[in-house]
Length: 226
Length: 102
Image 1 (cartoon, chains in turn cyan, yellow):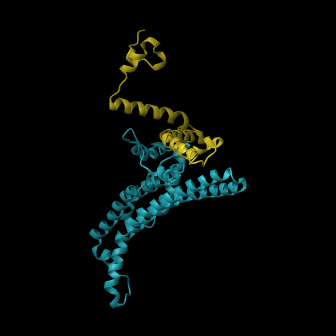
Image 2 (tube, rainbow over the protein chains, first blue to last red):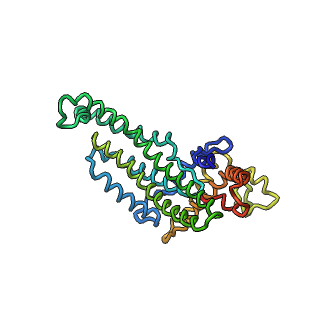
Image 3 (cartoon, helix red, strand yellow):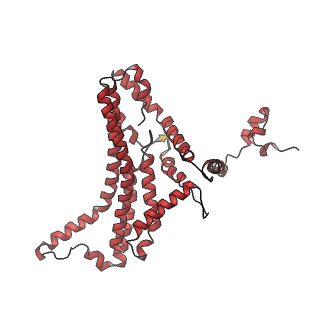
């Protein structure tokens, strides 16, 4: 039972071929492109949603920051669709792998920070010391702010990994409990089943929220630095 | 009108000619990519790119995705089923349910 629990997080390979590449590329099939003004329903829905999200997210940035719009929108679409697809039965969720989330978080964070240091060096360095700090506290506070800066990409990646993995594990566990309880006591099994349904609804929300949070934080780091 | 074998579509090929037709198909990378592209556009234009597309167009793709993932993990699932049997945790009638929807 314990081994089976973590089996769904193993990278899928088939005959030694990395199937995971296909799984990571699969969400792109669900977002077709079109050059028309009036599209079919799928594309219209996706375009409406994308416009809503991009207006809400990119409005806080100046011109320089808004050049990142394409990157951030692709990011939220990718994480959102990957997380939602992972809720389907038997599927593999790439965002449960820390390697992949680190691969997304570190370059984006580093890009924002390096942009800040290159273009607004004084302002970026000034971030290390909040206004109005008493003088004796300054060295300690600079160290703390540096650590807090360096931990941002790790926090981004681990947050996403932990949330999605924990959700999937809970669903596995409660599903297993429901199955096991069915032969023992049907009423308890029913209650557990209702818990499972509520959990699944939560997971849908979490899938989308995590995508949003990831992108929002990257956008905030960008805002600080442009 | 004599159409050469290479350019016939599958339904026009006679049964005797089938092996040679299969061997004549384009198995180069660009040929395979072309086959996938044609298949994709056939599905897309039939079910999604229509005036009143419904949820069925997307659901069929997701159902196929679930099915393929199930095929991929069948071996592991049946092994864990055997383990469950041996440890006495699951009764024989629950066999089908253990290939559970998670």
